[in-house]
Each structure stands twice: as structure tokens, then as C-alpha cells.
Image (cartoon, rainbow, N blue to C red; front, side, top):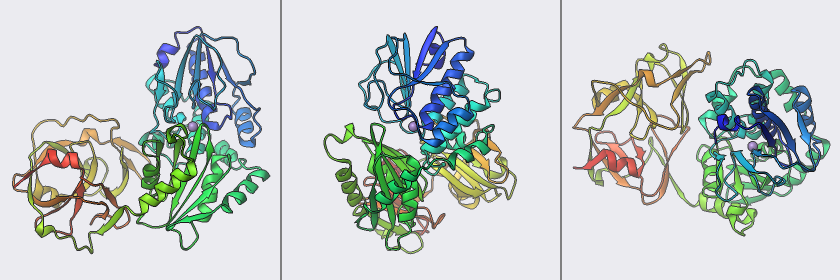
Amino acid sequence: MTLKAIADFDEVVIQCHDAPDPDTIACGFALSRFLDERGVKVRLIYAGAQITKPNVVLMIKALAIPLEHVVDLPRPKMLITVDCQYGAGNVTRFECDRFAVFDHHRQEIPNADNLVIFPQLGSCSTLIWDLLRKENFDFAANAAVTTALVYGLTTDTLEGAESRHPLDRDLAEFAGADMALIKKLKNSALTMEDLRVVARALSSLQLIGAIGLLRSERCDPNLLGFACDVAKQVESFDCCAVYAPHNAGVKLSIRSSVRETRADELAAFITEGVGSGGGGAEKSGGYISLKALTGVSAERFITAKIEAYQSRYNVIDSRNHNVDFAAMPRYRKLPIPIGFAPTIDIFEDGEPICVRTLEGDIDTLASKEVYLMIGVEGEVYPIRKSRFEESYAVLPGQYSFNAEYEPTVISRRSGDKKSIIRSVKPCASKADIIIRAAPLARDVKVFSAWDAERYFSGKIGDYLAAPIGDFNDLYVVKGEIFHKTYELV
Ligand SMILES: [Mn+2]
């Protein structure tokens, strides 16, 4: 259901979940302002225990959020649940004529009309912000809404460390939030009891291979990141994970201290099929739906996943490997049109830039020598100009882009953002590009010649490849992309 359609109702009730956190409150507040401006009579409510958390009490007061605590509710014509799903275990079910759901957790309830659920987002605030933007909501005239949404995102993604989607990063950088207030709220999040919760979590430590696992009782999500940050500093740990009950599932925080384990990848691996997870190489987080575990305890599930993850990978470093490429079959790259953009067409020579894509952020420099490639699936990666000229021919005409998130390039100096799309031109590989490649029989982590710190993952069925003449310039191609773009010689 669109926001416009909701604004057609005369009266709407917006309900936060029963343990209201900044994310659910921010979403309810933002939607209530939007509907109020469109002349809808709105009530913003929650049920369950009264709010006592100091940062939440302060947030409501400082931003003048009209959140009411209710026990009963006269049957509304339209009831919207935010950051939770109507009928799920963490939100009191009130009778209503119709309901709509806006959420970023895995779907917990049967299919119904009006479910707007995006588990790939780090916060529900990101979803509501993006929808309001598309309705041309006047954020400048509603600074309290902006502040609430940025704070909602901040707490759900532990200050951005666990953000999962480029839109999360876009909201984090959105101008107009009262950062002084957010700072104050961040520093009033803990009670004395919370410190005892952390102490109990730290004493639950168990070691699975080189990964430490902590269990916490239900608590403020900030505590998970805090406990994890402490535990990961233990010398023998590659990584540390902590989990705690949260909403109708389990929230997970992960911290990595070695280059061979990306925290975001481990989070995605643990939550695959049962929730969602992501973040950065060193810090990540995720959410698991208890319903999806079908009877297995969260502890057994997470333990088994961590064990499976560690026995799964071979590490290949382009600088020092013994892969026998010479024995692999030869393939020719097909001349399929893809896109490229010289970085100096986007920013000036020497500007430090960050390329924001669906797969994550890539840091590089704008330079005459560096081009960006946009592959058949919309994936973006840097390439040296010399390698580009050897391998590709520029095509006439326009490049057309179609994907979920338009890649943007951000100056790391000024914060200026530019779309990559205007600068992209079509190209195709020259007919004589021959590589050696073979499908992977085991999952791998590949450190390419480009980046000694960040690896690419390859799964069984993907291809390990290298150009003839330089077996150190090795890379991984996803199975489905490989079959579209290469032919056997
Ligand atoms: Mn949330």
C-alpha cells in the first residue's frame, strides 16, 4: 500500500511494537506527521509496558512526539504497524477493519494485502524515509522528523556499523538532523542494570573454533555491540558474535579482528533463509526470526552455523597462490555490451571517492588511470585504464541502466554525491580476450591484486579465473554471469 493511498483514509491509527525503541517510534512519528499534513486524523500509540528507557523517554520529550500508551483501542478503520507486523508476537493485536504493515524484519505473518516489508534494510526508518522522499515530504520543515529517523537508524544499526543497504548509508548522511541531540541521546542509553546485563553476557562466553560466542538476555541493542567490542579483543579470537532476544526473534552482532573473516559475510551466512544480516568488514549485525528456526533453539542454530562457516573456505591470495591455471580450460569473453565510466568524468583528478553500490562501498581515488566498470548484473568494480584499453572497445550510443539501487559516487573530502549513471558509456570486450577458468569445487575467499585487505567470496559453482599471461590477476565470476559472458574456446 502506498502512503498516498493511506492518506485517503479520514482516520488512521499508527501502532509501535510493545517494547518501543527509537526505530519504531521514529517511523510512527514520521508517518503521523505526513498524514497530519494531508489532513488525516492520526493517533500514534503503543501497548505493553510503559516506556522507561532513559534515551527513549528523552527522545519523545525532546522531539515532542505525540505517542500515547493505550490499553484498549476503539476499532479503527485503518491500523498501521511500524517496525513490526500486525498479529506478530511482539505487538498487541487490536481489532481493526483493515491493517497495513511497514517493517524491515523477515515476514512473520501470513501473506496479506498492504504488507510493505524490506528485510534487506538496516532499519524501518530507512524504509519510511525513502517512501516519504518519494512523496516529496518536506523534511526541511520537519527537522524533528529527520532527527527521529536518523536516530532510529543509528540505534538499529549500532551507529551505522551494522547498516545493510546503501539506502541506510544514504539516510545516515542525510542533512538536517539535530546531531547534538542525537549525541546526547546516544550517551543516555544505559542504565546501571544494563552494565550488569553486559557482565552476565561476557561471562557466558564459549569458543567455537576461533570465534567467540556470547549469549545475552533481552536488552538494548547497543549493549550487544558494546559486549562484542570488548570480547573481540581477546588475542585468540578471529571474531566474536553475541545474540539476544529482540522483537519476535534474535538480534545478532558480530565483530571481526582478522582480514580472513568479513563480519558482514558471516552475518549473511548465519541469517541466510531465516532472517537478514549485513554491515561492514569489521562490524556487522543481523536478525533471525524464531519462527523460521522451526523448533531448533537459537543457540544451537547459531553454533552450528558458526561451525559450518569455519570449515567451509579455502583462502587464495593473488600474491602467493598455487592454483594451477595452466591446467584449466580456455574461455573467450563474449562481446556483450556493458558500461564503463572514467572516474575523472565524475570527480576531479586526485579526489578520494567512495563508490556506493548494492554490494557495498568501494574506496578509491578519482584518477586518469582508474575507470569504473558496470557489469551485466549491474555490479560495479574498478579497473585500470591500461587493462580497460587492452580488454574493451568503446561502443557508440547510450548506456541504459536498470537495477534496484543506482550506484553513486561520493567525495570522501566534501561528502558531495553524484550519480554514476550520467558518466557511463557502453563498451564491450574485444574478441581476443582469453582467460583460463574452472568452476569452484569448494567455497573460497580471494584476495585480488586490487585489495590485500578485502576479499571476494566465491561459492561452489562460481568460476575462478585469470587472464592468460597474468595468473596473479585472478578473480571470481558468479556462475550465472560466467555462463552469460564467456564461451569455451
Ligand atoms: Mn527496527
